[in-house]
Image 1 (cartoon, rainbow over the protein chains, first blue to last red):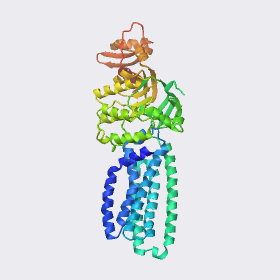
Image 2 (cartoon, chains in turn red, blue):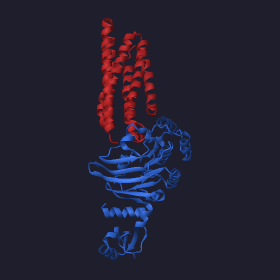
Image 3 (spheres, rainbow over the protein chains, first blue to last red):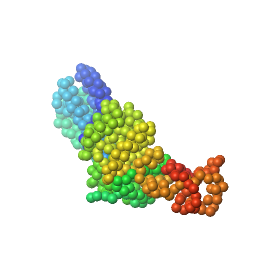
Image 4 (cartoon, each protein chain N blue to C red):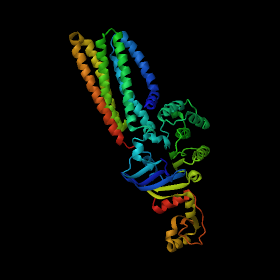
Length: 206
Length: 290
């Protein structure tokens, strides 16, 4: 698993650099302007798109065919893409919360936006990854693009909602409770998605 | 547990729409080299994928280094350390350079030998810091073969490893295969279209045609069994009438014919030339219908 994860990280290193430039640019503008909609949107897209890019690189090279002749289980190949997603989501969460704190939001508000990002991106990957393992990149492309708008839209909408309505001034505990339930549900769906992807991939002919 | 055959297939079948790999049975004795030949679409790559566990056979039994497919695909997956694989395309992550690939493989194989890998890369004069995507096909193939040998396998399975290589590079690789096979428990299964390469290194040949195994025999036995009878068209007609069983295949031209003759069934006085593997394959394909 360590080798596979390292391989994905190295494969994506070029894209990491591009995202880093965007994050720094939009991060600076967003923090300066006091509105983090753009930054959180980009972080959402990054954590949603990079695991699928890693899959696309593998597919183009025919890596899976070779990897499965090595002492690597099919389950590991699948789990690695989920693990990569979780790591990226964690990074996006930490950056979002930090940026929120920097513009003066309190911790609960910052966590609210960060957790929305975590939940939506988890849900996005939960839908997309089994489709990639089943149909491949080419056939999943349309759904891929449509679905990509979901986390970006949801996160941006959450930021807007929070900025305009200031829900925490009304009931902080209600919103935190709701979002925690949402996260729990997303994590549960993501686990189910992992199981489904493993099931699909066990039967896949290469 | 020691094993007698590096590879053992019993009545292995696999059906796809429009193609059937039909009840293939063959064995590769430990310490020998088998060449898998056949035209495009004959089923060579399909068979190799079944052996490597990439696809499941519809029926039949496959044993690799003494383990059944179910065993090395299941709890004994570490057994695959002993199988070195070179596919028809490099398949290594294209954005990575050779140093990064080494780090990936070192984390995958317990038996990984870094010194061996880097000495192979040096032997092939491959640049360590250039991404694989910038390599030529020949360079990619050399890298793949070097990587396959660097985890100390006992069985090498290769699908068209010499295609796309110039004669000098092919010769280098054949030398490498010779070195590998010097250890008595090392075995190779290699498919190739370049039959002169197989003729140099193989102990036995398995010939697939339209999903069926036409023969799987030792190379020397094949040489003893088949010969080329250059003759006139009249002589060919006479042979086909009087002794049809000995005609394994024939190619006619305006000057006469070249007939692949089964010497075990041919008349004793027939004068033949040695048949190359290439000619055997071409003429047998005609016989069995192209």
